[in-house]
Length: 274
Image (cartoon, rainbow, N blue to C red; front, side, top):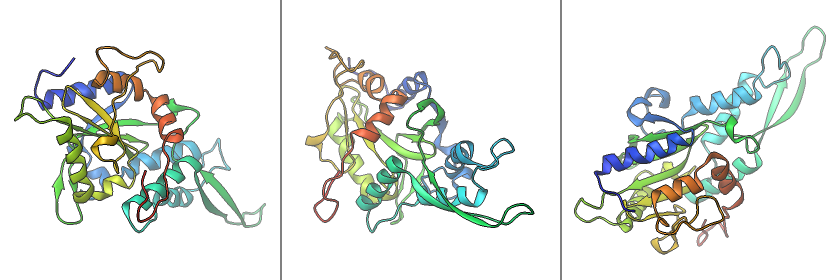
């Protein structure tokens, strides 16, 4: 069934579908302070820091947890993956998500113990316990690009402060846009606000009738519909709908499994891709 309403209504209906899966919602205009007042910053570092502190930080009941300095080093690594271009940074981030990062921890001497050094292995996602992660859906986030472009992507899904999923939505009743227009807009974002794709794992494009998913590096022919909600039976009559994709792919455990197990980088280099 296609969408019969405005683009704004389509956006909020999509958000409501994600709310039903346990995602919290924040409008992008409310996040500027959390981004340090910098619209070029797309990582929600406070959310990332909060997750890492909950999972690894030192507390009274966890005296061997990580000190604040180690948490800050981990935040910096996940927020700024290394690489000379977007594809290499994206590949580096994906490797860190799957394999974690190693952080050197220096413990000062105390009255009873000498100074020491150790290596801590830290993950930005709790893969085994999806419910322990924070899933946040943000709409209309103002993003300032390096060339001076200002854009507001329709919907972004954040996992522990990292922008992993991008939605671009078009209303079929506004000058006859198509899902191809949505995919084309994602291509414009790649050049205008490239920092958004350092962390991106998945793009979703929809014109209200057809909904497709693909990688941010992909051309239109590589985008595809999601065909099943339960992972077994094909949803006849609704294949390619936003409902099928959201309910079939974006439950928290399935999204994390998709990111961890079904994204592959081939020959990252001049002719490489994702």
